[in-house]
Image 1 (cartoon, rainbow, N blue to C red):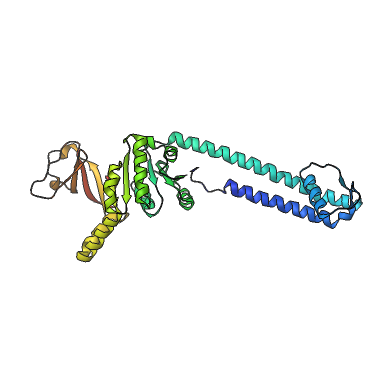
Image 2: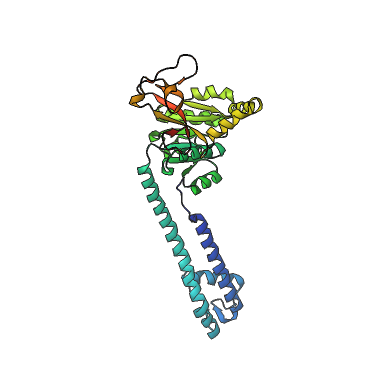
Length: 337
């Protein structure tokens, strides 16, 4: 099921509320009839029981009216005019209104999903909306990615509601299933971010994405254990981040060199201090030493490979190189990574 961002009462909840109102209306009508049961005539001539009152209330409110139970005293007829007839009209309004609202909501939702599918292209699919998934979405948004180009796939109902409330399109289901990934239009997406809580699920999702896209879609995944990183890469993931190992290295840095962790936190914390960014090399920079540039370049990316700038021999910039540099967070130049 696809959940598009909106702030409205769900159709099932609206239906439940209307059904409750209808039942309460029937009970109120039964109470009125039972209190005045002496003013009604039954074809059997044995008076009205509580079951007869329920029967008369239901057939009257539903406008069936078999005529086997009728009011014959002036008081009972007056109660029918002043109470039963308005209750009958209200009962029909509840039933017809519920049907129209549910059908209208389904039709409106179908139109919104159709428009969403037609506009969906070069999007990012985020599998899992837990802590890692929310952080990944936040990083995308901070780098200028539009919410309309982010699709969340989450099996937990709470996660789906949270994603929809945050303005994201969310698909409720297991990302290991081909049908769910096809709902997210995985074949036309730009990348798939796997941020599940299980390494086994991450491997299955990676295999499924690779099978559906023939390896044409970039897969970025996070795993808990280092030993599962190689397995995930064999499954088709292009980039694998080991959360436990990364956390361990940060803990070690905090113990042995506390100032370094402050620098790392500054680079990873959005909105303040420094940030890593990447841009294409300009024509005037080709053939120059990256260390001679005004910007602080920390690495070159050439044909998909990272070239560090440490050591005695520094590679010169070539056409098509990407520069990874450190910029101030208030700068709008480059793309943060």
